[in-house]
Length: 334
Image (cartoon, rainbow, N blue to C red; front, side, top):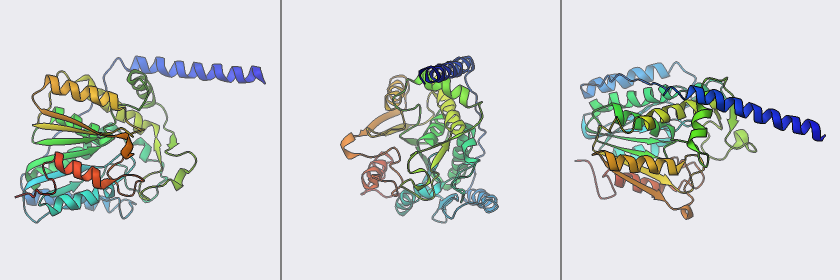
């Protein structure tokens, strides 16, 4: 048995080496993304934009929780907030926080990402969601928000936080952003290796990985979130991250403030990479940059937004987010 096992190990090493070589070749070109703003000019136009989205979504086999959401006050308000859900979750993830923000006087939009929210949680298409899809999700939210409020804020989680970071470099009209557990790279693995692997996997056939290989579709947490992820989806998100990272020096943020909110218990995102990015922005650009990290003893997970996540501790997370948005417990929008 020693010879076959040895041969299998050698084949795995060769396959890994081949992936890295091909990825290294693909890394020679920084992946390109694009987004053309189409902002709503009035509140009524923003409502029409949203109604058109919901009309299109009604044609899809979405779950009751999977649809885009708009919480408004019937008129334009001083604050409008865009909430961008995570890769394998859906707009329901942000709804409890949206209700708090709405109660404080803000108009709130939660746009759905392209392949999010399907009733079939084991569908075979969500893994093809791309970095461009995440940008389109953010763009829709921003287009609508410009007609909803005088001051626009964005809160993005994980992969969608990367889309928000890209928008910070390319789009005007946003006052501040809160980037929660941004997925700039994978935890505990050197970024160059992740970038090479992502460059290869973003072009390779898609396959799926369970978030928990033992529990599979019985994974604890929200029952409307997908229990697995596609390799191309993750790889394309890293490609978007690389675009943001490669352009840090030449594309300064076009807004007043960017806040990074991390948790030391994160087992998905690479916090050291995020901290380096935040430090670089703070040193080289005029935007006000802050970075805060929940300590490990709180055991707050990567998804600190969805109350259905085990150990989410949203009471602590929401309080901090409201503080970063200048909408803490004693603050209302006037």
